[in-house]
Image (cartoon, rainbow, N blue to C red):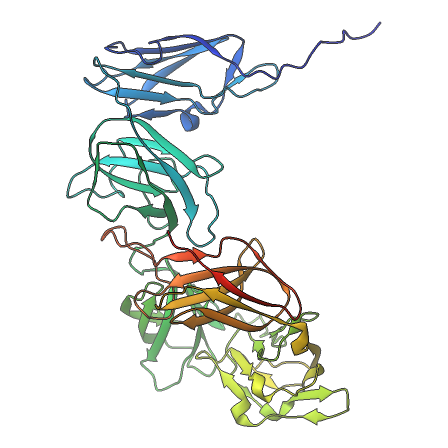
Length: 515
């Protein structure tokens, strides 16, 4: 005995054989939408997959073995063309073949609207096509705000970032594209990337093409959301990024503090009075350049008698990482997780293969504002291909009397003939920030500012993406837009293909085209 052979595999998608109303029907006034298929079907994720434009309010769903029925709670609007797009909601029972282009279009008048807007959505910071982005069309009013109003027509992009808003009525519309993470059809500026038209409205009377490049545009005001205290530190967490901080204490003591992960502000106990509550005046700047004056309080927790204070060695990271290479123009960075309260420059050595033991003059070093990143400038590094960074014990001491251990790391530098150069960008004068990016995660490898073309010299061989930010306000950084004032984020453009750089190659005339 054996199982029957089963026959040929079903590869055909379910097909609509009839519907109520029929597709492209006119003057339909009913309250029932019905689809019937040529085989047994399953209905999956209907609430997420079914796109109805314009909105009809609520409805009841009745699923049958070979179809489904929607019973509407309210009457359809007069002189309106409706589109029911089921996308991937319908599949056959046997092989889960998805229904293709299962869509029903009908009108409550004697004509069907036929205008169309189509285009593509990409992410501004990566130039990658973005799927499942909501593209919405709003009836124009001078008070419209996309963070409060739902679109009248909407559609979501496919895996290629392509969208098509079809069967549109002529009229004046505003238009935006955004990541609708909670599927409520309302834009949330704190969490969802967005792009929009900058003109007041589109006067739609013919088919159009509109492309969008979305980016996060968090306009929420800076607020303190959480405070965490220990015996050693007080950590303030904010609802959005902070770019700069200047603290002034009520006491005469000098505070030790730093910004962490662009969103946290940590104050270290150090030698501060730990018994009293400290009053702090904080001058902060958020990630989009807005300035704030906040009054904060800090009270360090007391250690329980059974708890003994623990001191662990002060850790750090070194750039370049072990096993990676640098070029002649690269400096060496020592990056600490907390501010360094004291250090001895004579305990920072360079050892060469010729048994030289070198130290640096003071001008070879540069600290950042928070004293947690030390730069050893490239001009003071020895002109050899290999050398060892050597730190003596207790070279650096942290704010909690924790110090570094003895450390050595071999650093290898590429010879100039093993590097290459990349030149190109924009021909026209302007203010640009050029970046060479590595990998699919767009890790920034090199950056330079220019008022014309770019010229990257002594570049490690590899595959790069060339990105150019148009620095319209000349502040030396990329700035987000503001959907409230219809101001777009600063434009970002890309060289149209990845750049493969080989050793001793000079790649030039890599010009970036703008739309």
